[in-house]
Image (cartoon, rainbow, N blue to C red; front, side, top):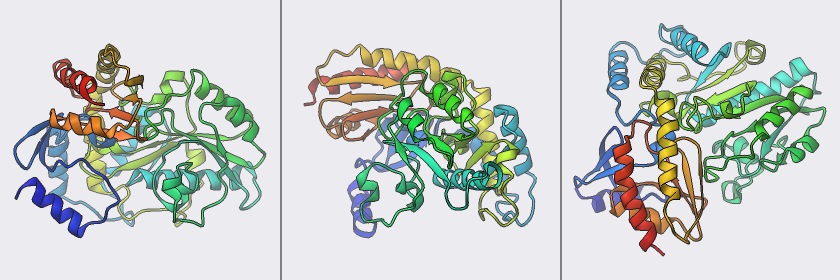
Length: 398
């Protein structure tokens, strides 16, 4: 079958809630993917940062296969021998007392929201059903009904109401707006240290630090959504480390499994996460044996292969190269680590389609931004190879 055949089947029998580039991938390794017709591409999206370790990393694959031969799922009705080890290793790596494992990033965000509300009622003393969680404009935390309730993107909400109340919105990066929004019933401030879907938007220096200080002064939980920015993507283990703060809760996912399996988690102190009692919250698949084994291997690869430092060094190199392109079409280049947003003066889709023809896969976001986020195992030579093509495409595409 050709790419056209596969595309026809997907269009004929699937839904149309995505607008993918018309490339049909059949295999992948490291930073390279191959389509059904044998053409290779450099992946500069990394499955929205889910494959920071590279596609089909052999050590994660070995752990996946080994565990799949033993036991994959028992549910949390019983214990397994992999989850305790993952919880201990997350503690050792991050310093947080406890972790609550889930599957998708959106489920982890929902878990954090529920934990913050329960904490507000049982610890802070907020009146029942009055807790508020402040969120930032242009956020992206997932697609569930509750999560889109605090989105400011109209398309994400169109046709899906009524919406869940209790989520005041403040302007991202505006500390005075946050200060005004905090009230006695405020339970938490939920924020992305770097906004990914908004176009790799970095807040003003000091914003996160001042926000954390405000939260501490008002007994408000600071929740960092590091699903995309965390585990090395930003050039730090977590993006909040750039401002030397420690959130009360951290939400992780995507690269926690290296792309092999949906694994997410909420990290926090026991004083926060232990507001959950048996029956309050759970997941059939959350913390299953296979997920835990894969997550353990994924974390080990990040540490042993120094992927955080690689992201920092190669991200600076990649960004410097992109900034050296002289083009009136480029309005801004921003990013941290191997997470770069190129803001254009017009639609980014034609550039992404032209880059596909040159053997580079990336994706537009917020219409005018190209996002470059290759697996963290990319080499300097591969960046140079990509830059020749990126410069050529930007020079000729209108």
